[in-house]
Length: 283
Ligand code: PD2
Ligand code: ZN
Image (cartoon, rainbow, N blue to C red; front, top):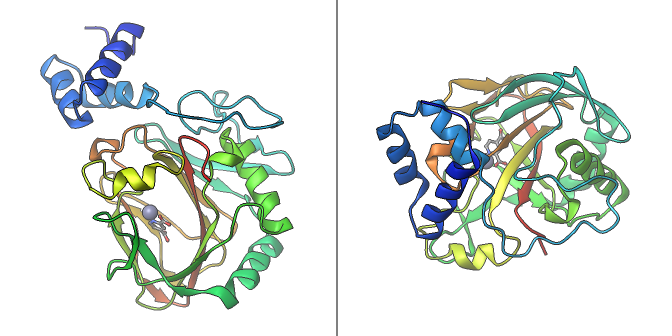
């Protein structure tokens, strides 16, 4: 059997999705029809999500990406031109899509973000999936703050760089979030997309649709612990200053295999900046 993602297969996935079939059911059908797990997941991830209202990125110097945020690694480059910086490609995985970058930020930029965020830190909230509001959650023992998009020159420059690197419109990004974890603080494994089955999700999706990808940027180096873990695929990314881990999820479903967490900091402290990317314009 051919395991290529044909237009017919893409149509079938779109039709089934429109008819209300969740990705897990589509995955089960494909496995039953003889597809390998990897090929079936590849097919699901290759299909563009239905996007209600994606705005064109006014005046952006690149074509908006088809499908999902994705750096151009087609020629297996060591470096990707992110406009004002050559970002290093340290490791990549196709299913799920995970890319570890080096040299995304220099030390001075990391410090500038920490210094600007520090006076504004408060105990981190997570989205309350029942209501679409926010709540304190024991799974997330960090403190944090959000910059608004383009809030200062350092933030604006980083947002331009990320948009170029991941070929996704700046306008589709949420404001950069900065988190600080002290000793013992962690972020238990979770998915970053919004659970379609939760009653609060439609309210959240009204602002730019689903999240489709995450970029976690390390702003300092804890002395021990604090890696970003992906339990489904046995991956742990070390929190090295200026580096970042990118991952994308074509479907808001565990079949994306993007379960991930922030391991407890054992010594020192950990600062990160997270950029979440939406399907459409985040306003
Ligand atoms: O701090 C991390 O490594 C981490 C882990 C999981 C951050 C996030 N999720 C996040 O910001 O979504
Ligand atoms: Zn996360």
